[in-house]
Length: 218
Image (tube, one colour):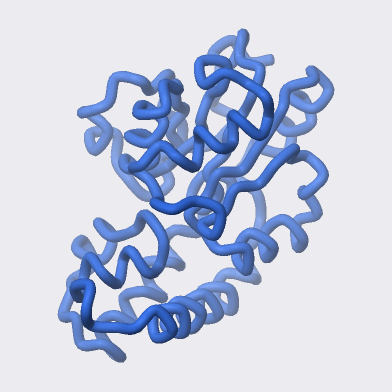
């Protein structure tokens, strides 16, 4: 096992931008819907800054709580997810080094979970097309928590379902809000620099390593 990961009994993975390098596709899909369809008038950095949490939470942050009904937000979210999947499908693959890490962790008896703000529609898209569902002991999606990251609920639920203490788990994340959630849960984090730059994580002291892909873990 990689030196930085030794001692941990559970690996908790965010999905988008952490297991697959797809966040640019999410930003592009949201940019089109927010600006072309909904006339939000947001530039790229403003859309990028919203890339965390549930789709409904994003829409409330941008437009306020009274703009859309829950049903309308669900429909907008599904429209965005279908556009994202269609665009990203030809490029769908795990980030370099992750297949080897998953195999090594399974052989070492480490429990693994996914804790994501994605809906099951997107999680299934990744797990089933890449045939990796069997690696994970539990999956916690947007539908399984009341509030998304930076609230720590998703990672605390993952740890509880694995039967592990928070301190025994390490979180793999790509977003500052995700690292904040890990910190609030009492967990260390490994950061994948797929969308955000290293300086965007300066506020957090729970980061063990920054890597571009899993081959860089030492």
